[in-house]
Image (tube, rainbow, N blue to C red; front, side, top):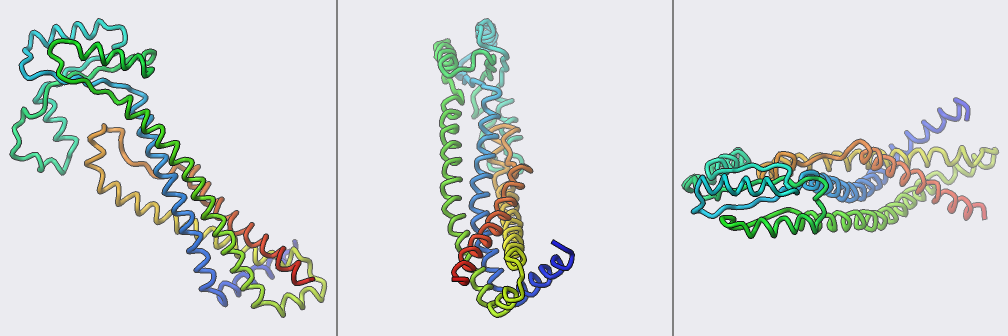
Length: 302
């Protein structure tokens, strides 16, 4: 395509954007809505996967001690737990330390704890499991043996939550493509409708171009470029809305997520996901325009 053709396409795109501004805005808004919903599922999946990896990388068993356990008994229990082959590390958390950690995790929201006694939380052991013993049956067996030790009131470990979260991540992944596919198909046809409106508005011009021998590629090019611009704008708007939602949720959930550990913080979309949303927007706009053009021009010629 020569520079004169490129200049012609640019002029036609600019003129169409001005003459059919609201049609383009409506189409871009529809694409932005579809890509936003798709991006919400990606954002949810990535954060759940991050949480899953954070729990899976360091499986810990929390054992809560009875209130009447003395210092000598605590030392004996720690020696017995350290002797277990599955145990990689052991940390004793006193009632005072548990209270301080809880206040630190709440951060600015720690004022809600005012009036509560500082010994309301039980002392506990944080037990880190060796990587070679992190299979669910082995962790379950270790937790059962820990629960039989005299002085341990309760045993908790995140394996059940990891398994459930893993299933939920898988469900979100499937829902992302299923719902996204439905929305993309609907958007595909909406883009085609916008192209047909633009074709009807330029019917006389296109007939003259065909009469003087203009190629179909030159006739199609402005519409395809318009579709790609709509897709780019829609992707940009969807990413901006996703970022706003991310910032608002991060501010709202910062205190709650801290309870799950320092690594459990919200994350925004990674560069690969951002690129995928932009590419999907470009393809939706470009291919939707091209598909509608082929059908419409074929009918027109007939």
